Image (cartoon, rainbow, N blue to C red; front, side):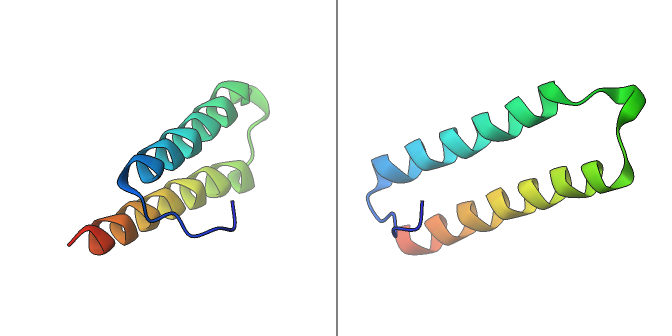
Length: 61
């Protein structure tokens, strides 16, 4: 996923794939054994997704 995604359709596909990856990680977490580091990683994944969405918005304008 190192290539720049500039096509709006490809941007949506990219975001959907990243969101699906996040959801898979979230589904795989066992609440009883979840550590603070695991929660931090989830927050980092969401921050990365938000940054990518903002970046795509700026290229659209």
